[in-house]
Amino acid sequence: MHTVYSRINNVSATLSTSLMVLLAAIACSSLLFTADPKGTLDVTSVKIFNGDSRRYSHRRGEYAFVNFNITADLSPLFNWNTKQLFLYLQAEYTNAQGVQNEVVIWDRIVRRKDDAVLKVVGKNKYTFREYSSKFKDVPPARYSLKYNLMPYVGLLTYGEAAQTTAPVQFPSAKERVE
Amino acid sequence: MFSDELKTLKRLGFRHVLLQVLNFASVLASGLMIWKGLGLLTNTESPIVVVLSGSMEPAFYRGDLLFLTNPPKTRYITGDITVYKIPGQGIPIVHRVLETHDVVKKYNGVRIVNPEDQLLLTKGDNNHADDIELYRGLDWLERQHIVGKVRGFLPYVGYVTIAMNDFPQLKYALLGGLGLLALIQRE
Image 1 (tube, chains in turn brown, yellow):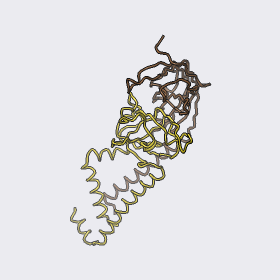
Image 2 (cartoon, rainbow over the protein chains, first blue to last red; image 1 turned 90 degrees about the horizontal axis):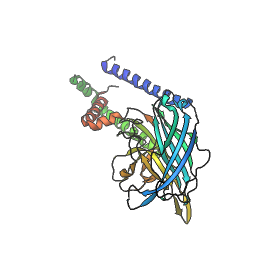
Image 3 (cartoon, rainbow over the protein chains, first blue to last red; image 1 turned 135 degrees about the vertical axis):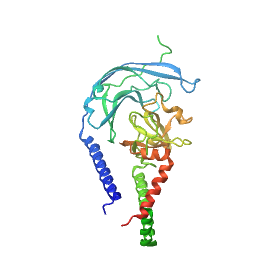
Image 4 (tube, rainbow over the protein chains, first blue to last red; image 1 turned 45 degrees about the horizontal axis):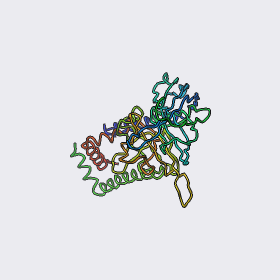
């Protein structure tokens, strides 16, 4: 009855069961942390310039350049099951043809609680183009700062940390920097 | 050591061996049923995937296990982490949605926005550029290419499968060992 094999079997079964229960408990504990911190987001300027498209050099397109300020304290989001915070700034608008667009223009990975107090004066990190390639007659866009809370184990959760108080207009395109 | 086991095998007889084979087959079958059942519930062809590359570091490392869902008639939003497979490219890719464009299409003369017509652009957190070069000539990622979105995360566990792929001997040793154990178990 008490062979080496059965002992190994029992010990490993107990270990793996308790490990699974512990991981499940940690994953569930994340549901108890419901911090929802809010910050402020200001879009200070939007400029649009003409340029060549990256893929097809013969095809011209318009590029938007956005400057923004973020102030937010997102440290309450950090709990014992927080691996990292993925922050992203998105522009959301419906163009003249009725196409709904969401475009991420900036992101940042926050891995420590100390870095979660944000004071960012930034500009877009990714190219911001319109789906139809022209920003002409495109209605104002809503900008918002969103986050994805990524755990050590368990469910991924999403939230919004800030948004502009009013939609921001797209100016008309310029050929070059003045 | 094995002579002892062989003796018990002889004593238990042919029926016992058959029974154990049947047991083994039922274990395999129920595993497959759970996998396919999960796939039906989550509406995706593979509800659990193993991360194979480092393009989403530091969020996901090689060998982490991801749980997917693919709810029908639902939009994908920026920040969602998708798993997609471009036709002609064997390995599914786990990357984050950077842009979504809900295009308007005509259905029976009526122009509507259907979530299934959504066009996406993705990017790996650890990559500098977006994925447009990975789309094999497509301008956008289409919904039909998407396997699912990541909902849950379990670290390291998937490394077993990576190890089995890298060292096939390990796979055969494991399968052989399990089969042998199933045959000579006494109860």
